[in-house]
Amino acid sequence: MVSGDVGSASFLNKQMKMRGLQKLRFYCQICQKQCRDENGFKSHSKSPSHLQKLSKVTHKDIEEYTVQFEKDFLRLLRLMHGEKKVEANKFYNEFIQDKDHVHMNATRFTSLTRFIQHLSQGGKVRIHGIDELTSDTDPGRFMISYIDSSSPNMIRKKQIESLKQAERSDQEIKLRLLEKQIEKANAEEVKSGQKEEEEEEEEIKANIRDGPINLTVSTSKVTKKKPKKKLKNVFKPTK
Image (cartoon, rainbow, N blue to C red):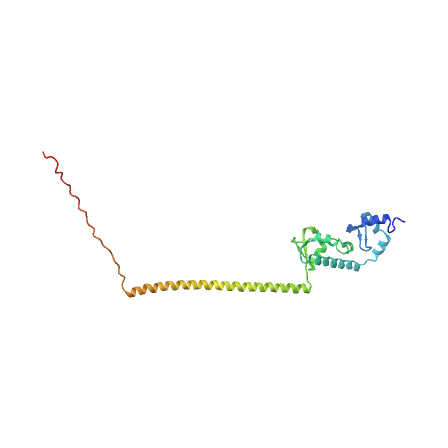
């Protein structure tokens, strides 16, 4: 049995090494071949089969890869995270777990940051955590969220917004009614106080009309106490 035949020890050993995610930069999208290292990728790039396929690649093919890559990226973002925020680099690592996905090196984008910029300018994703995104920004420094512009989602958002506005209107009406009740209670309290004052004034006026007010002043005589006379000592011997 030849070492490269299916089922041979060499073949099985090669398949074991190929398990798991390999380095994306060593993947040839045109030939759909994953190379293990840089030397293998260089050898593949110089192979006649690769050069023949490469000569047939057109700008249209690159655009098709780009469209497919963007479509798969957005589909997975919508399914896994919806409109929630997720770190750009973290989600990209989740996306490339599928070994059969269209690789970025086959598209017209040279980096993940440039690709995110493209999606943001097209209104397909929203960028969070950074004021201005440049082409050399680290994808681990900002977050992204999917913008669902589909008709059902837009209708659902409008319904939610209308419900929120209705709740706000109800709260405003209740608040206005409460303010009116407080104003009415304050007005009644003021009116009640004025009425009590008027009743007191009427009572005083009625007392004045019925007759004069008798004032009684009690006087008491003040008597001086006479000084006591000194008693003579009758037993005092005379000279």
